[in-house]
Length: 119
Image (cartoon, rainbow, N blue to C red; front, side, top):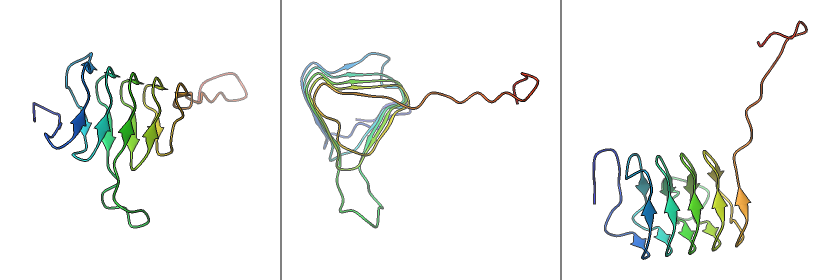
């Protein structure tokens, strides 16, 4: 299925009860990806294969049941996301995430010069 600004092909496997809370805006799911039941997915999320990688065999993510995926998160390659894991906004996930774990992007760095002014 393809709507404006998204790609969710019929070849991907989607479980029941998935909630795209902010609609399908910017959602990309690989045709080989598997997403479990009752997942909560926000906008601008990519669940993509590692297509084009020269170092690893072609693979796509497997997302367990009840996973929360925050806005802008990117889950790439043959990674497994355990059941009930929480993926924070703008996280880049390229390794397996255990069941019930929380994965989040690093906090922004604010630089200040010697006088206390932001640089």
